[in-house]
Amino acid sequence: MNDVSVNGVWLSTLNIMLVSRDIPPLPETEENTVKLAGRDGVKNFGSTYAARPIGLGLFIMGDDYYGTVAKLASVFDVKNGPSIVIFDDIPEKRFVAEYRGSMAFDTSTGNRKIDIPMKMDDPWIESIQDTELREYGEGLSYGEGFFYISDSSFPITASGQTFTVNNLGSTEAYPLIRISGTFTNLSMSDGSQTLTITGSAGINDVFELDSDLDKCSVRLNGTNAYSRSNGVFFVLKPGVTTFTVMATSPNITVEVIYRYQYLY
Image (tube, rainbow, N blue to C red; front, top):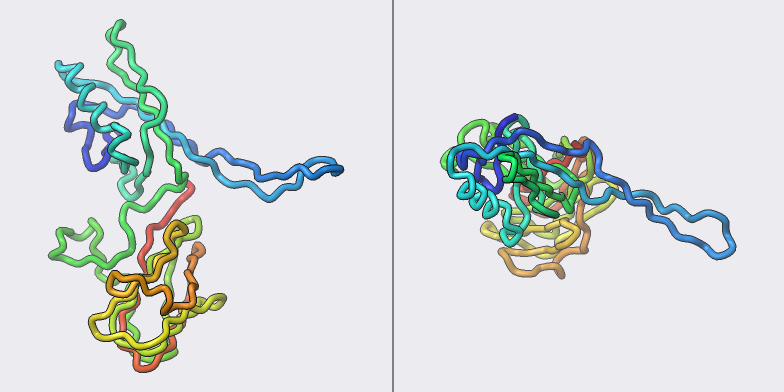
């Protein structure tokens, strides 16, 4: 561990070395309780995770100390929005965090170490790559997101066909479901919920159903098509989920696109 990337910039290229990091194995918890009049104690509605703080200890190398600090400040500028942080010894995971607090350093003693406080508003650590199918010729080589066989893209050519998705993360995922191709009156079930899309789709049509809790949208070729669905959005629990697709004359590809999320 001696390097970290922030929004694609490896700090070693700026003459900055990562010398320490502080990443709690678990975020802090927040209790969700209600005090009821006339009743001892509280009513507990369970606990949730708070934002996760992380800290970076950086060492400024080279002769141009103040110039390097200025570059460092530009990298962590909050006006850039949340940063994608990747450590060289954990290359398969990314931390989405933002500079919070105060950049601590002391030039009076000649100390070249700078402490950077950050916070992950969403405390879950993510896989560096999502599950979208990528191939050679898309700027990727093997090991950089290319899959010989995708476990999240499935051709469906018969009504009643099934496929399985394996969420390798440690928490629930809210995927984007992309359905491309021809069908009439499609339904897709995970065994507990059933999504329906009414009407017909042509060979060039693409439905995208985004289960993100901040979106919950249905689009057909980029246009709002919520009224074509019954408003069901899937949640992938850790492990294997089996889907069954029913439709008239289906000739489609179903893609289930999401990132694995981890506690640590």
